[in-house]
Structures are given as C-alpha cells and as structure tokens.
Image 1 (cartoon, rainbow, N blue to C red):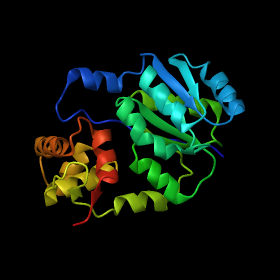
Image 2: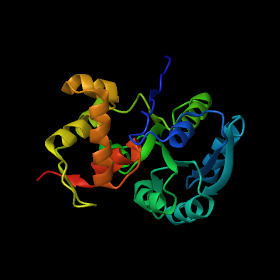
Image 3: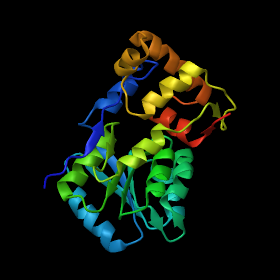
Length: 242
C-alpha cells in the first residue's frame, strides 16, 4: 500500500520580507541537520540514509535532551530530527529550550508509535513535522527537505482525532505575552492552526486577503513572533480560554 506524507506549503510572511520568503521556499540550499536519538544504531542508520541526500549535511548528533540543547546552541542547525523518548526526558521537554538556543531551527519528530497526547504535545511545542519510524528512507529524505524548505509535514498514520483536538482548542489570551486576541484574531488563528491559507481564511470569513494579512500582522506583534509557524506554536502552547 502506498503512503503519502501530508505537507503544507508556507504562506508569505505577513511582513512580506523577500529574504524570509526566499529562505522558506528555496529547496536548493544546503540543509544543516542534527540527529537526536538515544540509540546509536538508529543514528547510524538515519545518517546512512540522509548522507545520500544531495542537499542535507549532518553536522552533529545527540543522545539526550541536554546534549540536544547544547548542540543546538553551538551549531544552530536548520533542522533537528528528534526522537520523543530520550534518557533524561522527553524530546518535547527540549523543544522550548532548543527554540531559545536556536530560534530558527525546525524540529522534525521521528519516533516509534506513541499515544495521541504525545503527538498533540509535540505539535503544540513547535514541531514542524511528525513522523513514525515505519517510514521509508526516501520518505525521510523528502520530509527533511520539506521541513528544511519551511514547510510542515505529517505522517499519514497520525490519527484524525489528533487534528480534531488541536482544531477545537478554545483560546483567547496569551500566557506568554499577556496579550488578548480579539474575537476576529482568535478566529483567524484557529483557521491558521487548521492549515488554511490566507486566501482560504479570507473566503471563509468574507474578508479580503489584505485584511487577513493585516490581522495576522497584529497577531504576530501580540504573540511576539515573526512568522506563521512560530505564531501557530505560541498560539497552541501559551494560550487558554478566559
């Protein structure tokens, strides 16, 4: 049976920065990557697969949360392929620390079968992709290149109930910044979390594309972020219902 990884292309930034949009869309630049897994044999196998990828350069490895954070700070990778279960904690525990150490690094989870809550936690914590270790070598290479190009990717085996859970999160106030989103901003961010493009959001809410971009620009300011992916992460991780 064939498998199709679910990807979502990035929207242009609300600020319209040509440099940011270029870096997010380009697929020809070298992707600097760190492998994080507690099992050396897994790291060796993944390295062997990714060494065949034309645009991927493995610059480091780690087997613990502590080492992963240290390597992220030292090497500032484009992508980190990370297992959820590590000896000194869960991979999710490292996500925020990694983002603080290297804000531009994108996290691609590669793990064994896990419970739905762990998947939700990973997505809330800013993972750009989530894959199970049942994927093929070519699928892994494609996933790394996809995440490295600024897109998101999701294993088709992830239960639909996980997506439904995220879609139904009732949020309005950001714990991180103390900012309150307006009802319209809240509504727009819920659609962003669902993977809707600006054009689709505009159609759903009967707004113009420009108006949607303006709303997102205000949301970015309130959440203290600069891009769509980071806004989604902060919205899911640091918000709650009033």
